[in-house]
Amino acid sequence: MEKGYHSARVILQRPAFFKYALLVPVFVYLLFFFVYPLVKMFITSCFDPAFTLKNYIRTYQNPVYLEVIFVTFRLSLIVTFFSLLLGYPLAYFLNRIDPKISQILMIFVVLPFWTSILVRVYAWMVILGRNGIINSFLMKLGLVSTPLNLLFNTFSVTVGMVHFLLPFMVFPLYSVMNGIDKNLVMAAYNLGATPIKAFFKVFFPLSLPGVGAGSLIVFILAIGFFVTPSLLGGRGDIVISMLIENQVNVQFNWPFASALAFVLLAFTLIIFNLSNRFLAINRIWGGKF
Amino acid sequence: MRAKGLIIFLIILFFGFLHQSAVAVDLVLNFSGGAAGEAVKKFYIEPFEKATGKKVIFEAGANFAKLRAMVKSGNVEWDLAEATSQDLIIIGAKEGILEPIDYGIVDKTGIYQEALHPYGVGKAFYSTILAYNSAKYPKGKHPKSWKDFWDVTNFPGPRSLQNDPFNNLEFALMADGVPPDKLYPLDMDRAFRSLDRVKPYIRVWWTAGAQPAQLLTDREVDMASAWNGRIYAIQKQGAQVGIEWNQGMLQFSNWVVPKGAKNKKLAMEFINFTHQPKLQADYAEFVGYPGLSEKAFEFIKPEFAPNLPTYPEHYKKQVVVNYQWWHENREKVQERWNAWIMKK
Image (cartoon, chains in turn brown, cyan):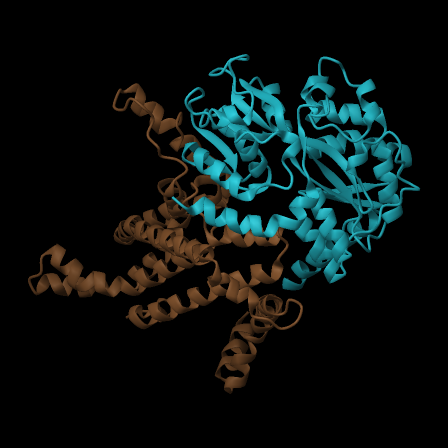
């Protein structure tokens, strides 16, 4: 045991070559299962069969595709916003309480991952439906006379997606908050700040990298969502993944499906780049401030 | 000490590989899951295994795109697969990803001829029909045609249609007064104008086969287009949902053999095996989708027969889908549909 530990230390102190050698397995894996399929897909999108840009031209020729991309981004923004609204207080609470209790509560944050997303989507249908739990309750109490339209619209899609994506917001936030030195907030109190001022002037700005990272992760995941908007949404909630799926499974136009996917990828990369400039996302994997 | 764990792991791995190669598989099938999949297992696969002694395994969930990927990459896992729509066979034949059906092995007699294709054999008929809340619209006062479906004054209530132009264009034209025998070629402009009229009353545009049945059971909608077998399944459970066969769209799902399938001869023999009238009768009674054997009706219980789309009285009221038209027009219709469905 001692011997193994010692040799690891020695390796990591050797020339940089050996340190980078440790990255090779991951690199090879990514090369085969990520880079190669991506390149192949790109080739599919521009060779139909000869080299052509017609599939990319088609993505903006008919306004429907850009419209759907816009709807997708708008929905993802709404979902990200509400995930942040619910996730920040939750992460803050977990950060403030005793670590022993927060460890247990964290299990509840993770627990939903163990349920199938289809089961969760159908559960929301039961809760939000015309004869569902909420409507039955409100009708019985006489608070409403006709059932509320809670299902098959942007509201129900947002609820379903936030429900699924909340842990992805909570984890980076919690992680960054844990790294914030509590003494800094103490110092603010010592200097005469009220709790609210201390929070907004000291704690909140330091938690921004977590906000940025969590928002970015939630946003990027939300863009790719398929099942939830498909089952919980109305006709105004058509997202780009549904169109791509249609092109793959029904139209069999794989070059066009690939082109749509790459347009989506391009937009996503642009957003990531812009976010990185303003929100210093790299702090999330950078340790304490 | 650490080596011991490694050895145990390697032994388990070894036995894992051993088990895999020990189970010799003769035939690999792929077909739709759900009740239809259960029926294939019970009434086709198990008798086949008993009769021939061959081992059959299957993967549920028909996916023609996956079949295409398999053939193109040269890694064909399935010997027999399901193409849920005949226009898929037309595409498959054009691209050369399907084996021609050997009609020397598959007996053509006693089979509905419209479901025979050089590259595919019909597996089961199904209809997209008008399903309705039979508690709200008791039999006699229920919607009897797509015109009634479009009529929100006499038949109020939220509705559901599939988020797909397939079938919907035909329904829209029939609702607008086009006689069923004059549907094709479809007048797209007229169909979309007709759809505009019913659009505000569609609460859900369903995407999964199970949805309309679920929506009707939950009373989220009062009428919907649906595949008859799905409605039959909930009727069996006592749901108050009725089927109106008039102006239903009759279509069929198909068996296809991927090009380069390892056991293609056995696959064809399997298709032929499933055409036995008694097996077809059992299959139909279980799932509500009749097979291709015309003689199956001799074995189907008379009280059950009205649940099937090919029941003579229903058969004459329905319209058979023109797959050739859909093959030629699907792409541009889909694009127009995508733009249309999002408009306010």
